[in-house]
Amino acid sequence: MNLVLDIALTHILGRLRQTLVSVVGVALGVGFTVAMSALMVGSQNDFVTQLIDAIPHVNLTDEQRDAKPQPAAAAFAAVEIHGLRPSEDRRGLRNPAEVIAIVRGIVPGGRVAASLIGQGVARYGGTDIAMSLTGIDPRAELQVTKIGEDIREGSLEALAGAQDAIVIGDAAARKLGARLGDTISVSTSKGLLKRFKIVGLFHSGVTASDEGAAFVLLKSAQILFDRANAVNQVKIKVPDIDQARAVATRIEREIGTKATSWEEAHESLLSSFQIRNVIMYTVVGAILLVAGFGIYNIVSTIVHEKARDIAILKSLGFAEGDMRAIFVIEGVIIGVLGALAGSALGFALTELLGLVKFEIKGGAVEITRLPLYRSWVHYAIAGGFAIVSAAVAGYLPARKAAKVKPVDIIRGAT
Image (tube, rainbow, N blue to C red; front, side, top):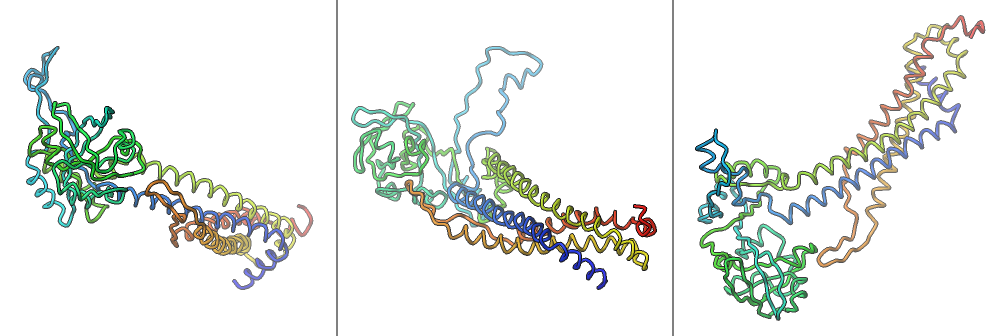
């Protein structure tokens, strides 16, 4: 085996320039694979982390996953009914304390916050704007959302001290012409009107929320929407986010209304990440495949140039397996050298990207460094693919070398 290895090394060193070109090609493929993987996976993980931190892991609402059949339709299934007026059921999760107790029993150690969401119209100084009004328990809300971090003036906790306090988006305040401490009027479709004092302004960076969202005390919302002792949303943070889907399924089964996990709510977004990763690895795989053709070209050229040497070796007793081994080893050596050099290049590129500093300031958003995810798995995948492609590129010419007939070569027949 040592002799086979010596012959392979001699062939490679004999064409040093071409060998270096192939090694560089493999190294570039591996290096960019590692750096791109660190950047893509890092940005994906960072986005998902921010998403998970900003929203509840499970969202329980008063909706039904499937509409209930109307009594008349259920009673006369074989009859076609026209102009049927459906029976109306007053929606809402009644007895929120009981619902929260059930949720806490299903999710020990979880954080729970109940709220009541409805639509209203805010008025100040003759200006009206439509507004999504959310009644909350401020202390519980701060445990399941990041609204506290978005407050720019005042505080969310100030809601707990008064029945007539409200927190609105800064863009909504500008549209109304109101400021912190001013009193605005809020009316609902129930015909009820209540005056609220602005005790906080928030900026989330989401235009729809900043221009049309407001928070009041839960009791105040129940009065405005005429929904005494009822809520229509329960937000839940679970200790283990990977269990969110299972927890949502169990809560929905126990309570009977729709419970949505963060994975279900953002299923299309998570699918787009998978598609993006497939595209990335396909492009990088193509780079390594091109490098493999370079290795094939070198080994094939060596086989052609060393035909007489191969014939002599076989006449001395070298078996076909030995001939294949020589040229496969040549391809693997080039692949290993390229993988090692590429791993070093990938590490350097990753660290270089980690040094890049920039700032994006828009409200509370401020990013100073690129999100990177460093993992040995990236090196293993890129290096392994490079070595395997190099071995395949070396094996194809090796088969041709193994089939050489010494007598034909020596006599000059071929």
